[in-house]
Image 1: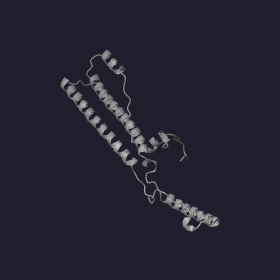
Image 2: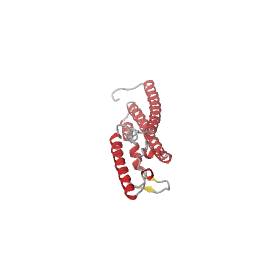
Image 3: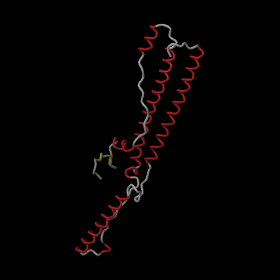
Image 4: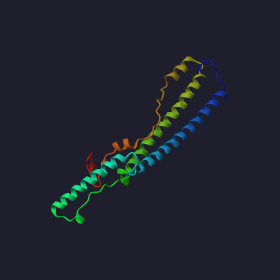
Length: 191
């Protein structure tokens, strides 16, 4: 903006426009944060059928293992003299939501997502305000008439920028410990 001088009216109009753009950007950040929450909720409540293409081969292998296990159970029962109608059977149960079927776990993940999204929204607000201030600083710099004023303006600290990114439920899941119904932390492989 050096080399040209702005009229007072131009300066005021540009400052007002910058403030309006800041308000719109904050509204969009709030809207985007709401979209991130909605997207996370959709991911959190996703159900997978056993015959879903992503799980088909796993389900087929588990069904094969189930048939093998039931054949072995029948063989053992026959050896032990247990009549076939009284023999136990092994069955495969498909949980279409995994651990997300537990209301408490969904609540933990939801709280973590909402907290992280709120932090990202605050960061976006700070970034938006910083950009407005940077613009107004540059605008004011074009109006300053002496070197001392320009040097003070140049010495003012500048804000860093960071954008919001979508949440990954798996990342949040890894960040939160898995707790059994008695409040004990579970490790990989625990039931």
